[in-house]
Length: 334
Ligand SMILES: O=C(O)CCC(=O)C(=O)O
Ligand SMILES: [Fe+2]
Image (tube, rainbow, N blue to C red; front, side):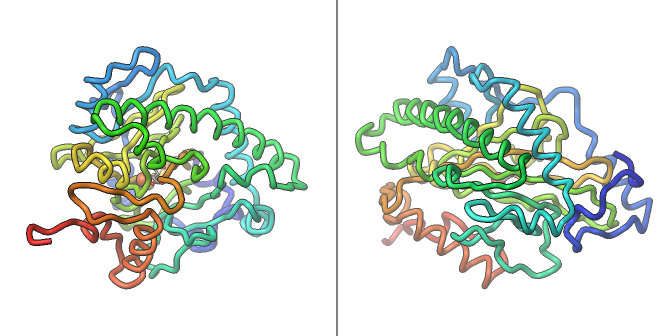
C-alpha cells in the first residue's frame, strides 16, 4: 500500500502524521526488509518431540509451530476481516468495538477492563488493537455484519488456540517433570483472550516502535503474523527477524511460564518494528494461570497472576516500563 492509498481516516489521530525526512524513513525501511529464511526453531505438533521442545524452550523461548491443525481458511478469513474492520473510520471503530470487545491504540498495556493505560506521548507505540476476551465473546451483539462474522470466527479460532496451548503446556509440564495435577491450574483456558493488532504505516522520521521491547506476562502467547513481518526476537544478545510463513504460528513463552519452570524456560524478549511501507495485521492469543492460582517456584516468592498484573500496571505508571519478574525474585537472603 503506498502513501496515497493509506486511508488516514481509519488511523487514530495520533498516527495521522505525514512523511517529513525521507532519508531517515528510508533507513527505517531498509531495516524492515525481512530475510528469505530465519533460524527460528520449528516444532511439529503432529510428532511432538519432548526433548526438542525442552531444548527450544530453554534456548529460545520461542518457536514456529507447524501441523497445528488450525484450518488455513480460518486464518485467512480472520486476516481479511481484520483488515476490513481496521480500515473503518477511526470514530466508527471507537463506536462499534464495544463490550465485550475493546479498542485501544498507542500501547498494548491495558487495564483489566480493557482500556489502554495512559502513557506519555514519547512512549507511544505505533499500534492499534482490538481486545477480545474469549469467554465473553458469545455475548457480542454486533449490528455490523462484518463484526458479527468476525466475532464468530474469533470464537472458533479461540477454541483451536486453547487446544494448542493446553497440548503444548502439558508437554512442557511433562518435560519439566512437574506434578501434572498441581500444574493444571497454572494454565486456565478461561483466561484466554485474542488481540488483533494493526500496525499502521509509519511515516514519521523517528524511531517509532510498533511495539517496544518486552516480555509477555502470559503463560503462553501464540501469534499469527501471516503476511507482513516486523516481529523480532532477542537471541544471544542479537535481534533476529521472525519471517512470516503462511499457515504457521509463532509460540512464545511468557513470564508465568518462566516462573512455573523455575527459570529453566525463558520468557523471551521481543519487539515489533514499525514499517513505512505496509500496514501489518497480527492476531495474538494469550493464556494465563487460573484466577487466584498461586504460582509456586523455587526462584520467586509465591504470587498470583493478579498480583503480577497489578505490579506491572503500577510500574508502567510510575517508572514508565514493566519491571516484570524481577519484582518477585527471591534474593539470596530471603
Ligand atoms: O504483533 C506481534 O507480532 C507481537 C505482539 C506482541 O508481542 C504482544 O502483543 O505482546
Ligand atoms: Fe509480546
